[in-house]
Length: 410
Ligand SMILES: Cc1ncc(COP(=O)(O)O)c(C=O)c1O
Image 1 (cartoon, protein in one colour):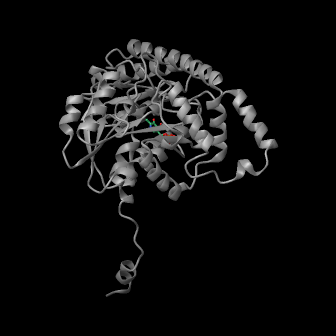
Image 2: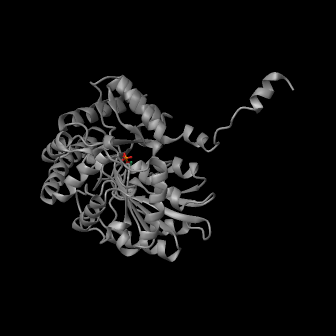
Image 3: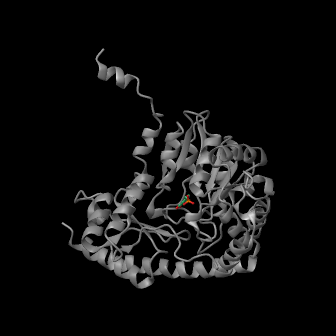
């Protein structure tokens, strides 16, 4: 044996599952964001899923005060489950928002939505389990499911049908003994779909009938523009796992805070995993959110204020998409921050896919939107446009520039 192969065979190994993450959409989205940043600040950014409004000023002032005046309390390790008073405030908040009545011991505070997904998925999944997701869906789910040794079953939703869930198709995708969970975001990223009460109930019934978990990602629960948020947990409390992140409301994505709610025995188990990974989520973020949640009036008006601004931007985006990109196929999002537009008419015959189109747009007209293929197989000729990050005039200007380019593409 030559020296070199002896050395190679003795190299320490790396968990092969990490290979899955090399090609994850999460990385692709990050890389695309970096590319956009390199183009500089004059790019019209219709990519971002983060709010453009900081948390209410009064809440920030209170926290700033605490930072100056408090003793060691702010710097201590918080409990692994999260601060008890915050877990209580979360349970109370869900109830005030019209959500399920839960106890604080059914809440696990975690470090943001990505961490919530990691803890929830790893707590229920075994090697080989099948997980049903919608197509398109939030780009974070597939890589995590594959990393955990799961198999993905995608159930398409169609832009022409408002990305409505096809409950029968979901039912047909269930395989007894293999399917472990159904995952939906409500309101949805990237489509803005909001589940109806009937759909929420039907999903919950499927979970109960087939003994599955129903994971409901409620990251945008307070951003519903028309209609009402419905709550699958109310119909199947033993089978439903709710995920939430404070990244969108009150808008602290950099502070990493979120929570999971589920029946008590599972919450306890999830907290064991959360402790082993991060021990506890950041305390300063917990104190800020606690202050926000207990000040209900402040919270309610902040939600209304942000929703009004985002709704105006959504309406402007919809109107200009219809005006400048006549042959785009889209559906009005009733929640969240995004419009998924199918641009097949302009690019399919020209063999341009969404990744190439997004780069062309950035390069030629300095407008950024996220390629639809990062969200699913059914949206490879679509782009996801987000509306919270730019004022109305720049949204209209961005869409106009895209329209001009699409009409001259050859
Ligand atoms: C539906 C959905 N779930 C989870 C997350 C991840 O949340 P976080 O940014 O707090 O990690 C996001 C982020 O955009 C999201 O849109």
